Length: 174
Ligand SMILES: [Zn+2]
Image (cartoon, rainbow, N blue to C red; front, side, top):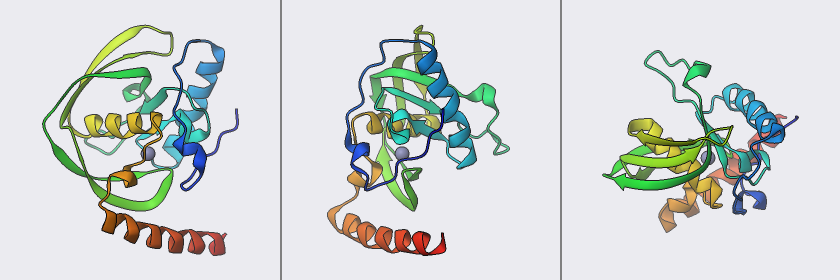
């Protein structure tokens, strides 16, 4: 399966992802193809919609203390539902679909989700720190929401201007 990352302002990122019903080979192939894309682009999380598959599926691989992302730390999260959210934290976020832009975003500090794994087994995950932040960022993708949507009006305007300039630079260097 050949996948590539959909980048803002592509409208496909605004789609609402649909529930996964079949935990079959198609889903497994998609998840298996998402992993190398995320790692090769230095990402810590990737939602299926970011590779043009509007399914409620996402993967996360938070770096350990040494900055490594061993595959055994990989989470494959299907049909997640938030069951508890608490506290407040601010972190400088980026997104593979909004390359080269980073901004402080406010999120819940602790989050508990129910989800299914690639075989459809139901699981619960209590998360804090970067994992909690990344879960919220990726779950927003399932609703067609991007982290830049959370910026103030003034910052968003500044972003649009900067992003256009960055895109032009990237195009001319290709
Ligand atoms: Zn993102």
